[in-house]
Amino acid sequence: MGATATLSEAGLVAEPGQETSCSVTVRNAGQVVDQFAIDVVGDASGWAIAEPATVNLMPGETGTVTVRFAPPRTSDVPAGLIPFGVRVFSSEDPAGSVVEEGTVRLGAFTDVTAEIVPAKVEAASKADFEVAVDNRGNRPVAVDLSPLDPEDELDFQLERNRVELAPGRAAFIRMRVRPRKRFLRGQPVRHRFQVFVTVEDAEPLKTEGTMVQRQRLPKWLLPALAALLVLLLALVTLWFTVLRPAVKSAAREAAQEQNQEVVKAAQDAGTGADQAKKNADQAKQNSEQAMKAVGLTPPGDNGAGAGPASTVKAAADGTPTDFRVAADAKPDSNVDRFAEFPYTLPDESKTLVVTDLVLQNPRGDTGTLRLLRDSGGTKSVLLEVGLANFRDLDHHWLQPWRFQPGEKIVLAVSCQNPADRGHCTPSVSFSGRVE
Image (cartoon, rainbow, N blue to C red; front, side, top):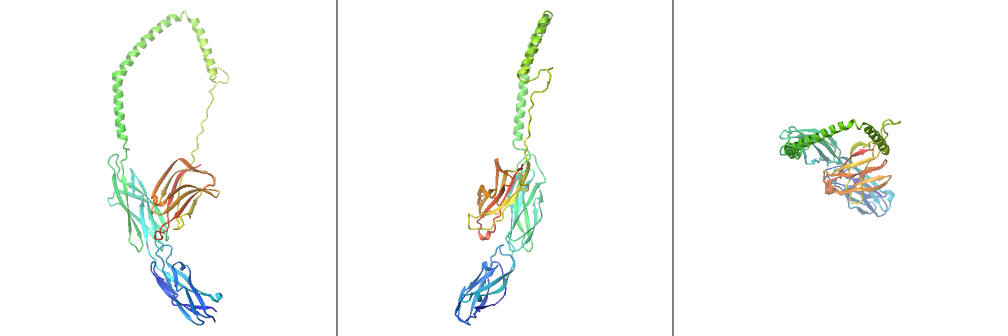
């Protein structure tokens, strides 16, 4: 037998961000001088260390090694009972190596942040916001949301009033704000409001937003109506002062000339009846020839009917659609490594046409966001943008993106957040149609 190991304390208690320790007594149970390597295995191995890492012992001799545990204060290490093992590896007798097991009970902490995005919206009758809630603690929490308008001038409509979040997760709750009073014209009015985020056993959080209420009538409408009224008055004046007298005079002269022509025609009607009949026949013949020349059937011919018919085929615009793809990417020091979050149409036989998209980065994460086209495993980059360059970013395409049946949209994120910031959680909202 190569070694034996005994823990001074098998059940430890630790708090996130603090250090605790125990000792392990190692005994050389072999017959020769041996070197023993000591390390920690299990879920706690990432934040535990043995000091010293190796000991040299004579046969029958014992040595003491201190094992230090320093759990980080992050959401990556959940609260609760975490098992570990202290492994003692014998250089001379590997088969005689041993593992002594123990547990660390890690305390819980609560760290919830909240933000209204966007912070300000301008609208006439309603404004849409999102309340971004992020659980950065190491235990699940239930969060209650309560909007408040200090001036009691707004009505609120929350998508949901309560949300449960696992450690390291975030939620975006849609909220619509409507002013109770509206006005047709006037200066914009700023309405400030708060949303209180309440977590059990923690102080309530308060986040603020602003709705800037605009007049309901477009600003250009009144000047346009005034200009139109001036133009109508000018036209009426011109009619009564210039055009109407001129029209009456021209009509009187035309009527007199027409009367003279009618009298003359009546006098010549008796003597030119035969000639008129011949002229009428000739005119009819010329008319029929002209109609045939342009492809029309003269009245009275067999098969008479309308000319060539043109058909108009209405273009199918497809079915409008919108959807959202959200990312949850772990921090990664390799800027060329991306976590991918694909989206596939429910009906893969359809074509997706994307005309608009909105990029959201409410927490101000750091890294790179890409939108990819996945065509049978072959991926191509459609859009690349740095996360630090935006919080909300709109794109509207004159030439829309078309995804053929079977192609996928892939949201790829390379997260370079510091360790204390946690995961990157940007999202992209798409609008378009399905054909």
